[in-house]
Image 1: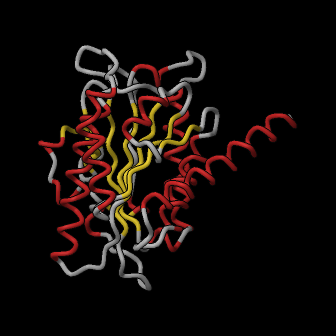
Image 2: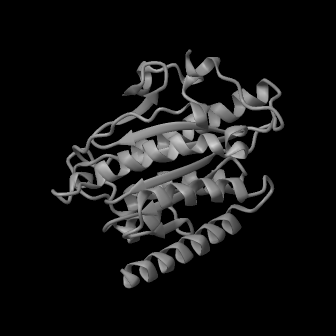
Length: 256
């Protein structure tokens, strides 16, 4: 059965679009013995297998997966693989969270983060309007970026704050207007100063945390937010939760 033949569970009518923007650049292929991209693949498969037991998420959350390296691609659920967005049917990119079969990601190329963010904002806005037009109750979309690097241009040069300004301004204007919530998780040596240009109050470092725990953080934070909550307050709650997770991880590592 196509994922679009699936229905959301009963008991909740409200939809929560979530867009996951996943860094698949060459740096995710390190370290050689245990590359981060393999860790991320395993965490995605494990997490989406386990979500079937979480009824509240199952009945509300719909997912769009985006991968970015030298190109930006979106997961086409019907074909089961990543494709350029112009090759996909945009109306069919969001699927119930328990219908997601994540593609196997590979690490290659550059870090075209700003292109990915711009595309994700377009998709989020279109999905929100489409659900409203169908008179389906919908919360503002959440966009989560997971990256270990720094935004780069088409030649691989790191972008400076001036080059990030237009995208950063769009993110903030949309948040202020209640159009979306945008959050960045920086892992394993991510360029936090540059990421904070893009999302000053919404960049959380989780240097060594297991990707499975990071996914738990993303979806718990999304689910715990209220529709009318100020985005800055949501960012602070995510930051507090991320800091607690990081402390717990350090304690656990110290006990090993």
